[in-house]
Image (tube, rainbow, N blue to C red; front, top):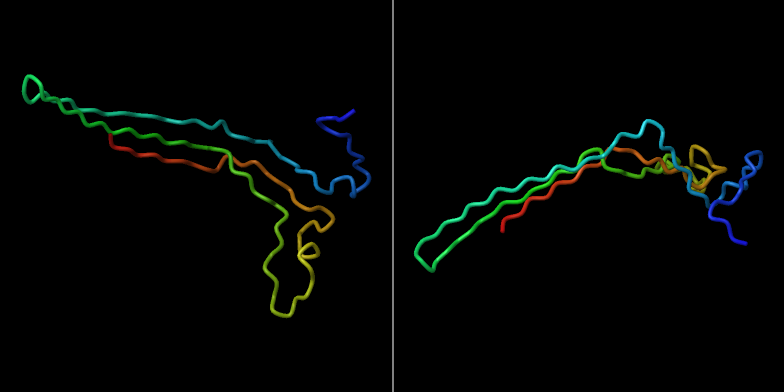
Length: 108
């Protein structure tokens, strides 16, 4: 039987290999703002024009960051990538931060 979340032996560091770990503590609520503005004009009985601006802004959006990134090596540092990581026994730590934003502007 396949499990969606397998059990992990926390006393064995090999249990964490190839597993994505997320930290959702202190996560802020994301939100999106949207707005529109349009102008309409009739020039003659059968001639009509319209122009519209649309925009949106996303704030506190999700951005995943690897907290176990190895620093760039010095010229004489021959250690492999895994040995230069802050926690070399693990492949990566993903933290889901609410620090991203988005912007959209359009003219129709």
